[in-house]
Length: 264
Image (cartoon, rainbow, N blue to C red; front, side, top):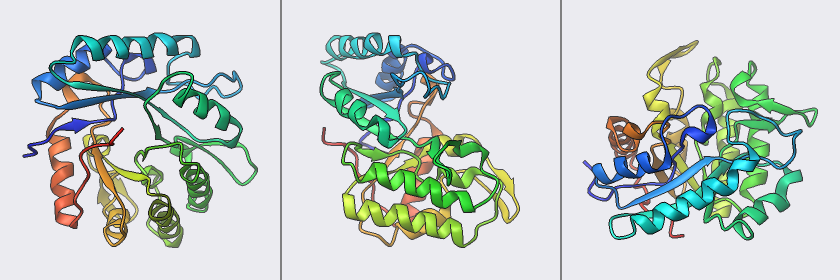
């Protein structure tokens, strides 16, 4: 049982695939005894060509940030609320990420690469990968974002492993690329409890959680990196649940001691 309880990966109904308002998540965090709650709903893009779906509309962004600010003031005597966003990295939007952290007043960005640039330089969906050859292109997009210094945390770094492929050299190579870049940049890698919530899936080489993948994290355990546990909750009741507790237990088994604060 964790005595210090913080979560910096929280979604709300604005992203179109979560339930609950921002305040409902705050109330759940209070009930769970959290000291800090960081909102990180999926960020929209100002470019209509970057319509990846399942996220707030661009004209909702200001209201989202103002709502988090309002809740931060309302509950300041009970909990610390942080204002973040989860977003993919693409080179053409670098100035936008910088504006989010300055002009828009966002406190932190989570790098959540649900889409990446494939061999042709086109947007590709991480959830639709059918060959492990694509894992290398996923990793290259991710590490380019990591090297910018604009992202505090790499969310679910092993997300690519949810696809129905057996572990092979490409899986390890992608993991090594990501872990080595985490060492070089100091970015925090996230151990994501939402993958545990998805339950056990059948793969060509066995049954496991889609993520976190023990093989990825066994490699990470041998590297001098920072790791944080995140709920990645999409319903208020999951702000702190059994999946989060199990995530901490699994890291302990791997010999990884997670950090508890983003030190924003």
